[in-house]
Image (cartoon, rainbow, N blue to C red; front, side, top):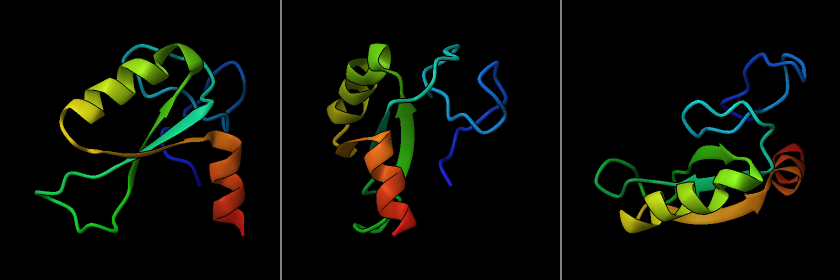
Length: 81
C-alpha cells in the first residue's frame, strides 16, 4: 500500500502528493531515509505530483536523505511482485 493516500475527489484510494496543501494525484515516489535514524536498507516514502517532484527531491537531496525517485506505477508493480 502506498502511504499518503487520502480521500480526494479522485476517490478514497487515490494516492495524493505529499507537498503541503497539494491535493493532486501522485505520479512519483521519492524513497528516502535519515541515516541518523534509519538503518541503511530502510526506505520511507513521499509521494509527488509532477509539479512538486523537483521541489521535494531538492529538499530531501539537500539533507542527503533522497535515495531514489521512481514513477508511482513502477513502485506499485514492484511492491505487488
